[in-house]
Image 1 (cartoon, rainbow, N blue to C red):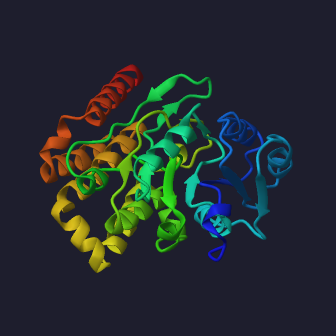
Image 2: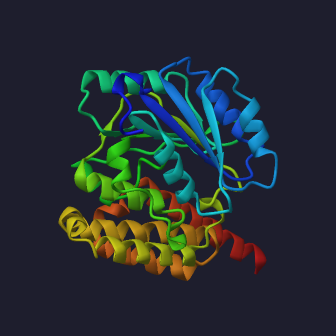
Length: 311
């Protein structure tokens, strides 16, 4: 691994963690194969699936250099991502969830980004959230200001389509604490960014496929709130993260409240939603004038209409 001559290493290792995704992983790997990009390998890490995920992964992309690793037991997905990075031979680890896909030209665009400045060790392509038919549901935006402020205000990176120098990533890794699941990527990228800020790679990136089985789709608002408390306590317990986040602490906390407000509204908890929104607005008034607030108001109106219909 580390003693291997750089000339023999692929540029990218695409790490695909997976668990019971036989219906999705073929599409995911086909999107990597369709890139027509040769300077890569693919490491699939199966988290002890009970369906045919492993068999599909081994046969579905014959022209790719694919290794399929199978965990000895079911662990958190962070374990699978970390294991894939440890096994990677590429200069960059590229994470791609098994229910997501890469848009055509994504890897070529990333290679051009590296060629323009070989010192770039951490970058991402802006993703697009689509439904299972491929229609755009949401297109995240990268906010204004410094990248430290952008990351304090949310996670435009997600996980799919993020490129990290392997050595840089292995110094930080995904935290495998179960209580961080669904925010482990934000937690990781903040820690990596405290060492080296990411850049945005122009062009297309990953498509995050929104379906009912995603972790975030089934996440209760109270679980999200506990997760954010754990994330915040951990990060502010690290001196380097205090230095990185302290200038943006109010935004960081307000963003969490804002997210919980939306999730609570979507789950019918109007009182919780309103209280978290008001706390968010006190901490960072500028979050009131955002797309998320507009979405929140629509959810409130839907809740109100539903109550009127039942009365």
